Figure 1 (cartoon, rainbow, N blue to C red):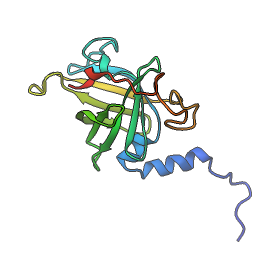
Figure 2: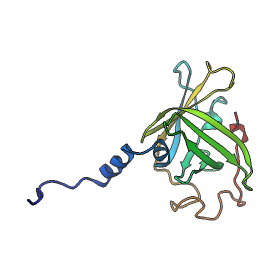
Figure 3: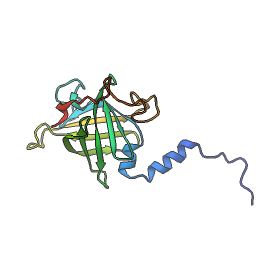
Figure 4: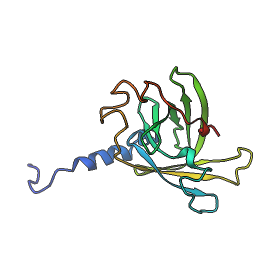
Length: 174
């Protein structure tokens, strides 16, 4: 029996959505660039993104499927790069940050409070010994092209900083 000619083919985005629906948490994180769009404290109060308690976590984030990432400040200046993983259940994200020679500068594991195709939120604790005070750092899906790549992928132009080295915001180590 012939297919119904009036049935429209599924749009490409529906196919991509179906793939993402069955994706692992790692697949979801690597599926899109992310922009920090908000921060909320433990009482549900919005925190300004330039507040010193959260400003080190603000920027653009590009998580690649190969387990590497690059982050930039909102002015597109390089911030961090290194390796990342997400637990299979999507409850935690681990990153390290590396200098230009590949030496690990710090590692951080954070609880993930939301991860879907549009929102990625993780929690940071200013004092690891006191989990009653925290900030949820909210990122949303963006189409912002990774700086320095002209949309062709990480490192397409040979470097990420003006002098060929990455720049780091070491204040992110908390």
